[in-house]
Image (cartoon, rainbow over all chains, first blue to last red):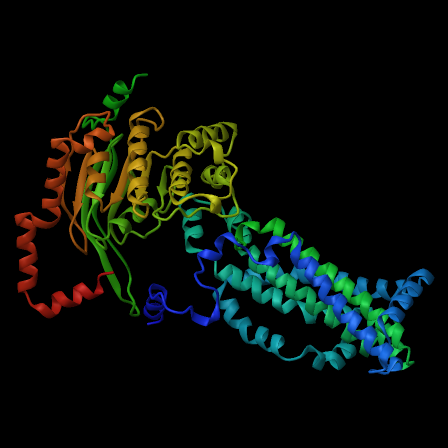
Length: 287
Length: 299
């Protein structure tokens, strides 16, 4: 039905549908401005952020917002320089980085094999499915008191929360990747009598890699949130605690400076995964 | 070695030992309903000699591809026995390789990586296999793109890789499942001529036996030492036509009168042969509800 309709519109030389430009074929030779400039997305992204900062500064200077509550970009920048030059920020960064690092290592080492096993064995998957979806949909913050009870008030508890926050998307995506493997790949493996081990290393894992990396991307994002949340609740150091503490003491510029550090770290991690994706699964990306 | 001498070696030689023996084989696959089995082919019998090129021709859905998959070891043999070089087959093995209907390449590997996959999977990727892979890649005309990713190739190039991957393992039984069926007409003809050329030359061991499934009658005549014609579903062999066109065959053979005669003969066997027509009438007269149902259950 839909195809019939689109056939009519495409063969009908009437007004273009959806307000777009005339014929999509004509746009082939003339890419938009976003495609003509090298590194356009990076450039325009920076421009967007700068516009927001200018607006913030203007609002603060003109008194539209109260500078004591909102701070302003120049003060935040000054505070960031101060924090780094005195070295006061390194301890919180170190704490959070250690937590997230441990948690991500465990997430990768446990999440990918778990996802593969659940993807390959239907019975195990059926057993695990309700548990996985409950753990994925119930906010993990709810379990925080229990985790403190089980693992104490120290770093161990914090790492457990970060793992809990991040591992599920990786398990779920890996499992989906393993289950969605192209039947043709399996047939090629079978015809050339591939061994079980080589089947895993040469077919299953490469084929599931796009899903695994998507899962990893989600896991990293969620793990960072988990780390901050857990530091709000049980910590005397780390970036989350640093920001919360600064806010409690009404040091808005310091709090904002901490947020900026966190934002940059998150951005760098996302870029890192993007680079890994471009290298490892360039074969699967749309042109 | 001259091409002519090669061609002689390739011509069907009854003295040679049978490479493939099929006895009373019936194949089925699970149907849509629970526990239901749909019969794909029934009571297949054939003997193929070493070095012979056999084409299986039949209407679509007649079970010829299922039969080829059974030869490759992908489909369980429900009844009867298939022997390769005297040994009953039990699943896939190193002595057979399949050229798939769709290219089925691994997109994360380049052309070379895909071509060596068979040897690698079978744990015999030695220096000789690597050299052979390089030679075969050149032979199928992909020397310039050996390190391109699979997704960067055209449909015809992908099928060349598919073919090369099967050839590198040096199978004694080479199975081809409509490998050119999805190509455009021009590419298909080029590929057919190239395969014929490779078969007649020293590119493929003269002891290799080939079974090629197609629904293209001209393709069958061009390639075959022998054409086996399948009936409609559930398929069985209704005619066995030796093709004695001389080798080496060139593209010019396509327009010869002999070629057309074989072509017509196979078409007759497929659609209009008296015995076949009589069988069809018989089925229809036994009662329309039954024949309708069997039509519906056919894939």
